[in-house]
Length: 112
Image 1 (cartoon, rainbow, N blue to C red):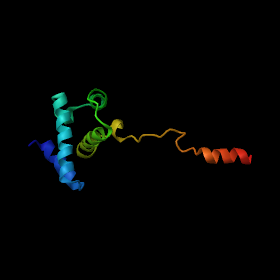
Image 2: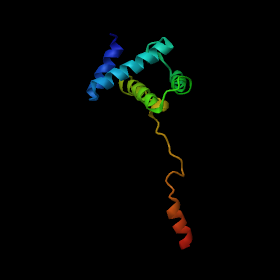
Image 3: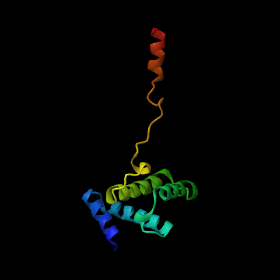
């Protein structure tokens, strides 16, 4: 077992995640490394973005399967390697119209 895999497993255990989650996370990171034939700590953010697109568009992963892989990979890069890549750490912004309530807007216009 590599030192990097040991660190990942220790980090998962310290986070209090279950044994099945540990196995799934290790498997996802292993698949990532196999895809590039590189140690996962040598993969760039650009390569990772391409891999995630590959999982979604080429492999056709369902949303839940994709999310499982994404969160495993995110855990590895953010928690184990302490990478601060925008791909993994920036918050997704909602549409500026997502919080508009049409009923309250109609009421406001009618009251004017």
